[in-house]
Amino acid sequence: MKYLEIFTVESNIALNKTCFLLVLRSPVSLETVAAGQFVSIEVKGEDERILRRPISIHDVDKTNNLLYLVVQRIGKATNRLAEIKKNDEISLVFPLGNGFAIEGEKPLLIGGGVGTAPLYLLAKEFKSRGIVPDILIGARTNEQLFLTNRYSALGNLSISTEDGSVGERGLVTQNSVLKKDFDVIYSCGPTSMMRAVADLAKKRNIKCYLSLENRMACGIGACLCCVNENKEGHNVCVCTDGPVFLSDDIKL
Ligand SMILES: Cc1cc2nc3c(=O)[nH]c(=O)nc-3n(C[C@H](O)[C@H](O)[C@H](O)COP(=O)(O)OP(=O)(O)OC[C@H]3O[C@@H](n4cnc5c(N)ncnc54)[C@H](O)[C@@H]3O)c2cc1C
Ligand code: FES
Image 1 (cartoon, rainbow, N blue to C red):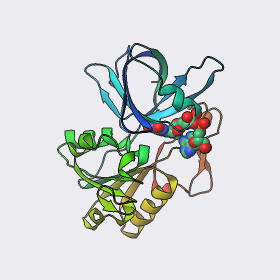
Image 2 (tube, helix red, strand yellow):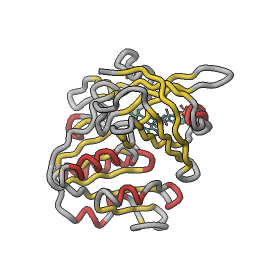
Image 3 (cartoon, protein in one colour):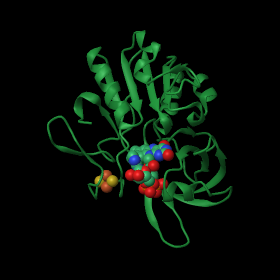
Image 4 (cartoon, helix red, strand yellow):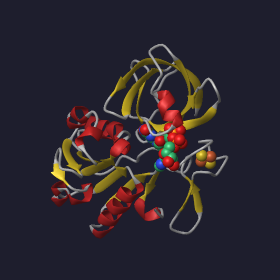
């Protein structure tokens, strides 16, 4: 079931130069929210209304009805979201998308940039099942990292930065943690990174889930603006069939 509800902003905290953490209070239970799902958030402006934007669910506090989103300022909508303040009201359609299938005993979670955001709730889910995931985060520089202490509280954290400012220098696919044995990989981030992760998983015969962040408009399967080709050459809607797909099922 999907909801259209007005949330109240509890806080808006800057995490680094471009990313911020929104904590939103829901008027309804968030019990059904699952890792890997997303919300479609209304962005108000004085001059014009712009389309709702898809943002992944970073975390959820089901006891207190709080939803956590990490947003990166990239354009008009996300810059407006960066301005919202405590007690502002904001309309959300949620929960959208299929979410991650939780499986495996030795999972590796690979996030790039703000694509790391949805992996937090996934790591939390593994931890609640007694499984300590490996979490590998990639960024261009340490200035783009966020909430690393929260991730390291849930799993074994490794970091790759392209400039070597934190963790190992290079791309996530070069990180030494990949020498370990994994039975499932989950990844979200730039397409080029997910393509490299999918290639690596295929070579090592590891099941791999990718969370796609195609541009969206309606978020509910009506406009077809988010379609992606699957391996059979058919179009699938990332908003309703995804955003999570098995890497073997999707063309990137
Ligand atoms: C399922 C899903 C989950 C997402 N989760 C998050 C999240 O947790 N945090 C977050 O910050 N963002 C997330 N995004 C991306 C976010 O929706 C876009 O960054 C946002 O809509 C951009 O709006 P804007 O008006 O600020 O930028 P625009 O003015 O629309 O775009 C600015 C620039 O960014 C590019 N761009 C915009 N959207 C995307 C995109 N989806 N992929 C690649 N390039 C894009 C545009 O081509 C343009 O060059 C998610 C997207 C999807 C589909
Ligand atoms: S965003 Fe409209 S169909 Fe997916």
